Length: 225
Picture (cartoon, one colour):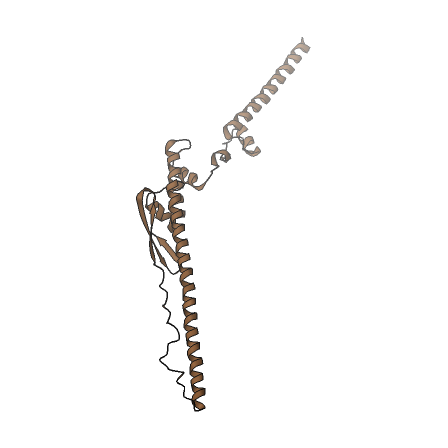
């Protein structure tokens, strides 16, 4: 009888120890769930001992913080939520402003936009082609003008050379007592060439829709309006 009581006592003690261990294990799991998976061992031990648990620092999800471009980050900062229409409109608006700001330094782009032509459209492409044509025409006219100026100066130089030769011959004859009248300061040695006219600085070009565009050249720079 005594042996039976002793065995029952041992079994009871084992059950108590087992239950305590299970309760402790269960408390540790509960603490892990309440604190978070990033909890340290000291925090779990403190929680199991019924101490005040210290929440583990939250680590933001990388998937939620991945931003494709600065415009999306700005819209998120403004409070717009992903996958909403307002968020999409915000991103498109900022991207449009960015594109517009990047093209303000291009006067040709600004000119075509002023006429209402949108980038990547056929009308816009034709407008840019017309501006390029205006610049090429201005460069060609300027090159022709420079060539005519060189020819004009060469003719002046040749006439001056002939006058110098005739004057020298006259001095030689005068020194030898010869007076043939071959040299006369009023003699003309060929018709004086006409100086070339500079190219017209302004020109007009036709755009789609029957519109006209004026282009002005100053020096080597051509601007269209």
